Image 1 (spheres, rainbow, N blue to C red):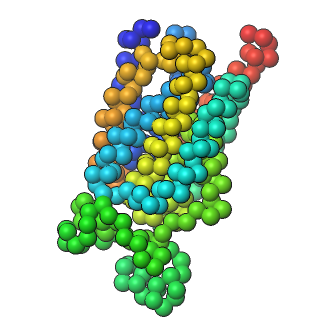
Image 2: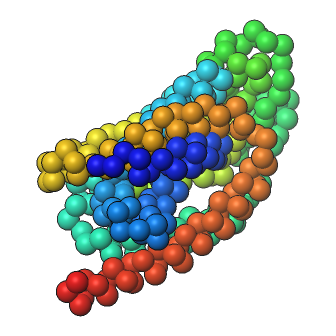
Image 3: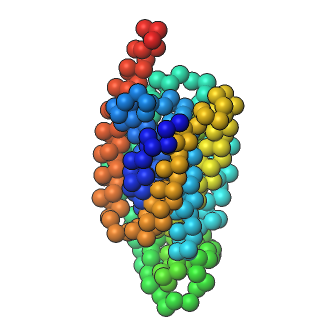
Length: 324
């Protein structure tokens, strides 16, 4: 292995991890198309297989989101109890997807990724604003209307009024107090039939390296109207647990099938420390870019990635059909 080959991945990975932490979207959503679309343009020595791309992207994301988790934990924004139902569904399904990834042709993975990018890009471009209701109105609604609807609000209170980072639940609502003294009160998130969406995202994560963060964040922020800072932090927790176990499954399968060298460690050594750095920068910058603006930018990028991946999948399929 030439350990000088992927030096450029250090600054690139810092940028990817920073954006991933700010948006709550898995870094693998950016790494996998980078490996499969951009690397082949750099030369044959940079080419890695689709299965290697998926496994490596997940492994890198594990470290990046671990760093991001620490950052959000320090800010006291993670709603651990809301994360548990998502994790319970996502982990076993994600592992199944990782085990299946090695059994499907490379062009199928690439084509499936392109389709997923179209869906995700379209969803992100169709932004719906959260409805914010002042806390006094929340209390009134809970008393007079039996907790109809869901409410989310963040308001500043004197520091120390509530325990930092603690989640308090009462009568269908939950309160998170950040380290900066901000209080976030919102309806307790529900999964219900949406657990099928979580399972689909987890399966796609195992197969294509992306999906769980992209279905968790919208469920929390849009469907359940959890405030964006808490939704992003909680999404990071769900992603890190799911991606960690899924990536370990991928790496184990790669080593079992091709030996220790089957994992592109000369890429990993640059990307891992970089995403750890980006994982600390992202939470500090969270909120500095309007979430609506970020969603539109990432949604547009996903659509561009989808077009590029379609061409890659087509050429892989034609090469396979012609026997090359």
